[in-house]
Length: 369
Ligand SMILES: *Cc1c(COP(=O)(O)O)cnc(C)c1O
Image (cartoon, rainbow, N blue to C red; front, side, top):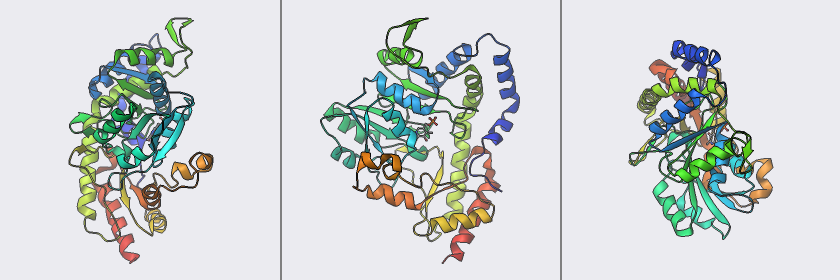
């Protein structure tokens, strides 16, 4: 069976170093906010080419704390895609702000700037661009709108560690970059984790306060904050994996090329695109299969190829959010939800794994014609 993702394979790749890192933490004096977290924050900021990094408990809270640090809260509206992990939306809701869904463009599954412009009201305070599947959103187009209307622009980089937008590392470009280290992400812990990277000292200071009870010094809260900390074990493991992140992203890109080579010209299938201004890091390799996606997925499963759907129901169509968005449609988003299929993708999949998955997909599609 070929799994759609396999975090254990990554542990096995770096087992010796990870085991050593864990033992170092267990035998150390700090289990929370100690030397590993401090070192990881410096190393991850350097990777993202930002001045600062504040690690937090997960990617959802990275979004929440970034919004709060940028003074967004109750009564404000934040524009985001509906074609995203629901975590993007939850992060907004946690601040008391209202998520407002905009449609995506169809090439890269990222926010459509023209559609975003139409969602702006006097209450709009921010836009969250999601670099979905590992492909950056068109940040210049969104920045232009944000500047005209005095909005903050936040990057949801949870699927795009190390992706490039016009040769700049995602996370370093807008007002804040938010990351998740959920185990299957391009940089994954063995539990929950997240981080916010920023360039401005003032925002950084606010993030530090917010993540730990509003403490400036121990036991003295100067603002009302939260508890959102990365622990030392996760930080130590992330430090090991960060050293291999660029190489692992390169391996994902090689696998993407293998998929492209094997699937080019196959009918009934649309391959993912990479903009000329982008470096895709293939958190997911997502094809479109108009009309017969669900049957095909079942057949593939029977042939030993596991796939996933990101995401089967757009957020604005999920029960919890129906009243928020109302009946109006987001046509590009809804079409994408019906057609997308995520093929197996992780660095350890290997050339053979990708070739086998591609062959089975091709066979299954031919049978359906
Ligand atoms: C994974 C993810 C998040 C954050 O998820 P957590 O599980 O809270 O770490 C946010 N946005 C997107 C697009 C994601 O894929």
